[in-house]
Image 1 (cartoon, each protein chain N blue to C red):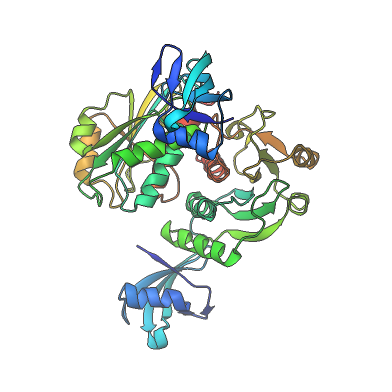
Image 2: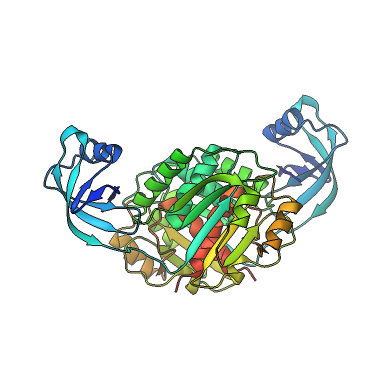
Length: 234
Length: 234
């Protein structure tokens, strides 16, 4: 089984975006009459019949649909400072989506080495990971913003901040309750400053340990996703 | 703080291997009289003074040592089929070491796409990850061998096998006891065959779920390390 992505649906017709169409027809050699599965990034899986492939655009007729596929009763928001290495940063996106995340935000911190991201590329990686891991929900991805702006807008019920300093004594895995909403801040390679940590505490954040090991930024982000999903394994 | 690696110690003298020596002197510009830290891969951290750097070989005098640094009271053995992509496979090594693993074995399964690995390169990645995450123990790494050979030699107390088929109903995180020894088998991209799973069950393995999500091979390996370390967070 394999997912294609499209959010271009009118009545019972779906059109695949150009790249998805090409992949479907030119790489995977699907033909008119074949059945494929489409995820819309919002929880719905459509079973579709290919009815046209002209101009390298695949047109589909919906023959069945399932809603809220894989819906969970918790919400994970990871807020992370992008790493200097694009490669490590993109790896984080892929793995977070694969393991399960609802929202990803990027922050510019005092010690950030990277202050810009290519949001189109990030969205593309997230989409590929969504399809690969047979998920129907595409996480919300927010462009990079200043630490202070992001932290003041955090709305999740449980707020955590992970950093390398040794003030934290509680493991995230022990603190997080089940079936709730979580926001986890992960700092840059140079770590959060004391001022940033203080700001977070003033906003009701708990400082947490993710592991006994010293983790790289991108590993900490993935570890956070694993722990918060794990908390909700029944 | 930063670790160098050496296992070349005679009395209170340590010599850094050639590459480590170069990195120390040519890249990081350490000089005679400077203090550096050396991990021997067997749990000992040496505080050393640089006493000579001729011929691009760094000679050190041990001024202090700590043994069993970061020693844990559990043992994690991950047995994994290498992925087709070198890149994904090497990522697994790095992250497993960073998060914490005691032994890694590679298996050739019926559905394996990769039947050879470059063991020198694997050891090098493990060593770099060990230093980066300030660990003093280097995991034992075994060269690739057939599934049947590896499974018959497994000695850990708790044996688990993870795969994509839906027979498993228990999460690894619920099954694994604290302070024990664990062996976790992770299959190739084409999954274990029914025969391999049956063999594992006959050898006393429990089939387990690592996540509610469909994970790639390399993600499953890392997830296993995270869960088994997490089990032992006090």
